[in-house]
Length: 240
Image (cartoon, rainbow, N blue to C red; front, top):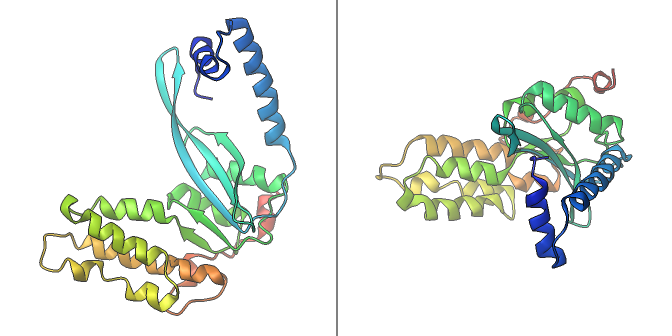
């Protein structure tokens, strides 16, 4: 996927196997892996996940003109037993709505129709948010807390980041909705310091995606706007 040379692959296999591998053997291994990956991506999917996690991972792919950075769209599924699975991935030209729609439609046609899903966890990218209603409608969407905390910390002075991070992590794992709202005291604890007002804006938008609602994510938690997480487009549009 990232265009590694047979030499680099051989070096990796050397560390695993403990003996040198010829370029011909490396090529044969690569062909075998290609077949295995193709079979993995063609397999039928089942609606056995409680949470669907979607993200784009940028990789540097080597070409004759140098390194080319391309996103890999990834779908992870959280099973009822708490274990995560890689459902599928796709090398894309970008993280646009069109690319995400192709990826999600492919998942849908292979059997991942969204039945039984409690929520979809996303990084907040506009392309993904635009594509979700077209393929998987009516499923609550939650902003990924790792991305959310990272974005907030970018707006905070370095000296304040440890305290802010602890406060946000406490808000990310509350025992109840009331506790989640009560922990929105990041700005209060930093009152009088040169902390941007944007911190408060970023933190308060998190209340609409409080993990406390994950117990029953389809219910309307008081103080939230369900239109931010629900869509009304017909599911049939994904199969057309």
